[in-house]
Image (cartoon, rainbow, N blue to C red):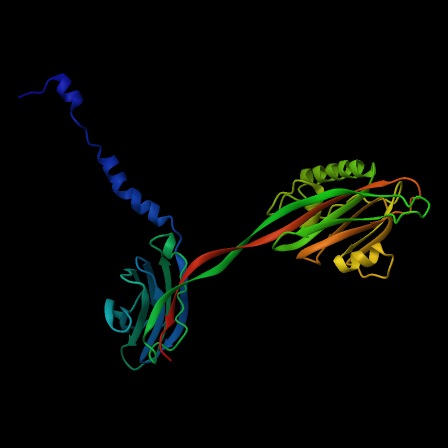
Length: 344
């Protein structure tokens, strides 16, 4: 019976192209995972040669074998160690390419045997495509004689795979009192603690009105450096000129000895006490008669330290600003699967 126009419009229409795309889509996603190199080896085949690697459950192992002198390889075998066969091919005299699905995490054996008496030169490559992100990081090396000690456990451990670079800003202001014609000790201190994982840092010490002028000039220098591309290649884009300087950029930071000045030293606590009592002291850095000073430091890199200040002004107190930019590199860890032998 002929369908009505309405019935025909409501009938489901299956698009063959859409169905094909739906089936193909998972494979497209899977193929976007780049194969991870495992081995690329050329060797002389004389009798039998065996190679052992670790693979994870769900891996797709891409095997390619070549005999480079035009002769035949009697057998190429891939098996779950020690003797569970997964793949075997015979009389290989050209390029052999095979994709092998790994059923279980563990050790796997690739074995070559020759045909005839003549020695052969072979080459093979192995790549793995992990089934998921959990098995992506695998140590494929079997680093012991598995024939002498065939028992092993599958283990997991945290391994450092990179580091994250960041910049932490510190800073503040202190007032250094005048000596009041030698009635007071014109000293003060600014305490700071470097963040964990500091690898280098930079600071600016500036006195009074020179602070704002130095910051303005350095901001202009950073803007010019950004426009010329001088700092665009950095992994981290700095927000201030001092941060760029701390990261290693070649920026000519503003320094000055004009106007109000101060003597300062970067010290630990014991040497701050000596500094405050006008005794001989040791410092990581010491400068005198500066209105604006900028330094990049590679030590110290951890702990709490002090900017010790001393003024030679008899009458007026002075305000000292301290800007610090600390570059940190935080380790990034991922979980790695590996094989560990048991027994002696």
